[in-house]
Image (cartoon, rainbow, N blue to C red):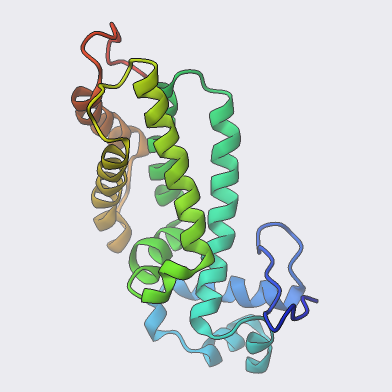
Length: 218
């Protein structure tokens, strides 16, 4: 079992297979409850009952209900970011990698609605999120996207004079905006269609006119 280190609870990812059974049951219970309820409406007693454990066990592994949410989110983020980093290694060219990032981002929201709800609706309305492990993981993902954009500028595929940081924010904001209502109302989200539409607009704005690249990066 995780033991306290310097007064802090040891952390482990639910997705790496190393979590103690009780901890995993608690995390799985919260995921199950989030499929049908908002986080604010879920109590620790309800989580414990769903997990089939005592409420005290929740506080053995987590500081509070919000800490549990952050750890569940961190497990998802670690899994998806690590997988994305591996897949991007096999793709050549910054524009092709950019398209892949956009598609993977939307696809995750399409296939894992609990993760999407936590990230888009539950986590960021609380100030401590911005000092949390999930936020550091999101920054890691964001920095990887920015490196792709910087490489595109260096290789003459993306126009100079554009801020990679600003382009990154436009891309991330656009993805979240086009997916948000689908997540909130549990509607179908097409990763292929949305990626095509976003790339059509984004690439027209950022492609270097002298690169000779035709915008068809499927």
